[in-house]
Length: 408
Image (cartoon, rainbow, N blue to C red):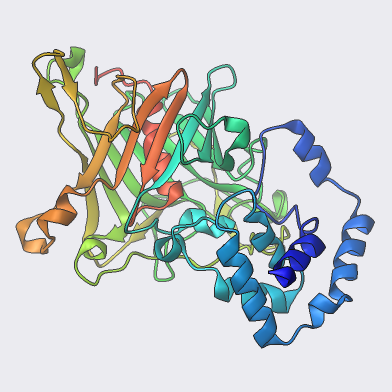
């Protein structure tokens, strides 16, 4: 334990910029823009210290014990800091730290693109800011947890167009530029708010095939910043059933997850799990200059997005769990197990929609994969689990916020 404390104290104040422990405050942003000389001097100091020259076996043991002892945020930032010491530390840290599916913890930014835990849901909450049309996702185990004390995960900003609405999703609470290295994807709706498409800035799996559905305007990276994302990959579609004036009861929705095969919830199945960002966002904020043509993100039409993901497997389809009518309360009810406390048309639970031939057990069919609900003014809980990632779950929940002219 003494070695763990020494390591934590020695490297706890480096690599803050590489950690995804981002905050909403402007104060944090100012601190992250430290002079380059100061940052380099801190890194060189650690690299030249005794910790950088530890034998691999001993280093593996120390990082493993540190990872086990610092299981929650903000203390988990020390595990992230280990990966920022040098290349050898980074490789061993990546070997020690498991995916959320395996350990139930979020550590590196790529964890937000990996499937959640199988055994228990990952509990988060969303804070809505009506004045700025932004939404912030935090990791939190208690609905009473204040936003300032939660672990910031994602932010999204609503951008209206003439015939559609975009929700730009970023790893930063302040930078929503699609040319930024913090841009991870977006959600786009049609005019009525009944159909949505989730776009990922990176291929959802190594075998993804890029299809061009129709010609579209393009631009070349030499005309813009080299940090422009390489494309938008259609990974999911969300459809809300038409329900004018609410005559058909509560909202009904269906999500087709193109990047997740239905086999992932079958016995022995696995969901695609990315291990790193293609632009090495975990490791560096630089991107080599490229001359390849990129997608024009200014288009406001769903049909003009040229990149789609083709999969030979049948995609997983999620549907909202049907609520039951409560005679005494005279309202529709769902069992959120205490995680939702305020009635709202936005509240929902998603379960798998499968055919008998797909050999999914009844227990897995009844398992709630994602639930979302209101707990206070502009505060909502979001609990997700395998095979969804935090990014996919957040995008689906954002669709519930959008105005639906023909659904209620």
